[in-house]
Amino acid sequence: MFAIVKTGGKQYKIKENDIILVEKLSNKKGDSINLNEILLLSNDKKEIKIGTPLLKGISVKAKVLEQKKGKKVIVFKKKRRKNYKKTIGHRQNFTVLKILKIGTKTNTKK
Image (spheres, rainbow, N blue to C red):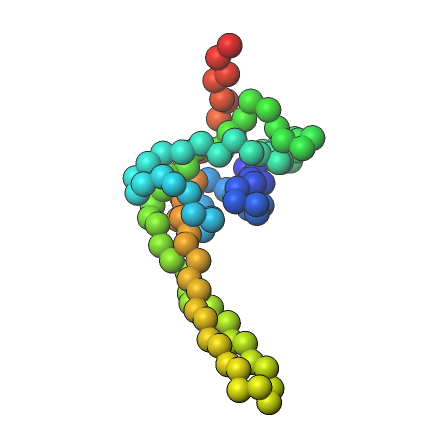
């Protein structure tokens, strides 16, 4: 069983017990979260459900393992013959998630 989930403006193909790096989420280490933006869901019988654009009533349960930073990216700017050089470093923040369960029903209370 796998699903395609959208979070942080990116899409991820996930399976149960996968560990993925996503854009920083505000949850703390050890928190359990639900990812509700499911684009596609497939089970072991090769049945595929495709959302238009999202599947309703289905979510993915995940656990936050840690908050960390990615590798440093160096940005170097230079203008020739003008004696202009500028170096900037950037480290992106990430959240490490472990996928616990795919395809759980969400409770919508009215």
